[in-house]
Image (cartoon, rainbow, N blue to C red; front, top):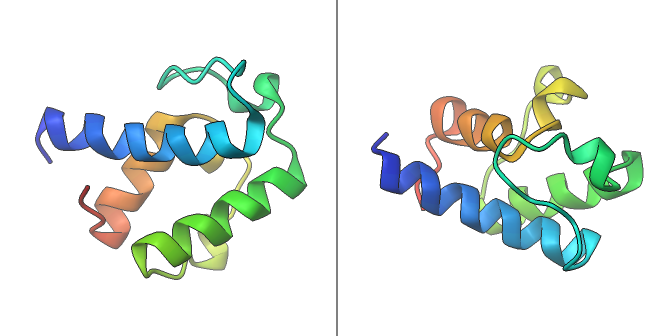
Length: 86
């Protein structure tokens, strides 16, 4: 995946998170999202939104705290395993 594609996917994920966490959250690609308010309920909402928006189903084995800890990790999962392109 090219850098601009990764950046675009990260921006789409950041927008989903902004909708869930609010505009004050620090949503840099490597920020630990748990420190910005990402809890289990928000994570489930994020997963559902990603599955609907990208027409995928995230496998149970990918539902790990670390997998959803940063925007960059979420982007990598979506692009490498599920072929999501912005």
